[in-house]
Length: 133
Image (cartoon, rainbow, N blue to C red; front, top):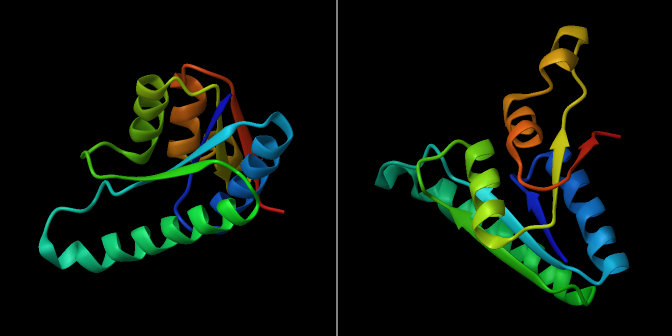
């Protein structure tokens, strides 16, 4: 089984990562963790890329300590985070996607967030959404 988690370092993505690692451990699955760098266009964006790489490296190290097979990927393809997540899942035969969602106002609950909504509607596999605790 292959589990994908969309990770950007936010509280909601931390919650998604926590659940994804639990699923990986229970189902003896491998974990792919992606960060989409949609806005990276020039050299002045290099610090953002370096920060994303550090976060991904830390995630990979934490998974290794837990005995979870983990691959991290910084995607710089010009897609939105939702598009990156869905395309990566299609390209890599992902069996489950875990995404974090933020608790929003009543109107925000309808929309849910463009990334999570896109992934839920377009994903080629089941999607688990995790809201902030």
